[in-house]
Length: 108
Image (cartoon, rainbow, N blue to C red; front, side):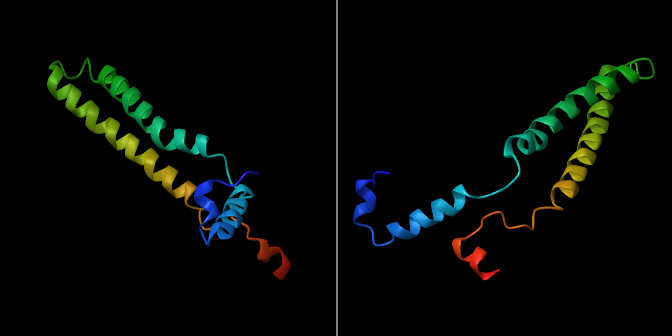
């Protein structure tokens, strides 16, 4: 691997290499699936909930403004339940250190 000119004069360039090497060996879960579950799924749940609740209240509430407001509030409630459940489930394994340093294996 060719060193960058910016790193050649730096007194800490060896430390950077070891840190990037440790980060390269990090073992962890696939981040894309968790990102989709954290950001995209709540938006989809809100949109689907809005459509479903609007359809359910279409015969009971004839005016569209209160029906839309009630549907939005209920959809937001369902979305918050999902986000809370996702945070509880995903926080179970978050206390694990995923970066293994070179000295850790020798000490065991």
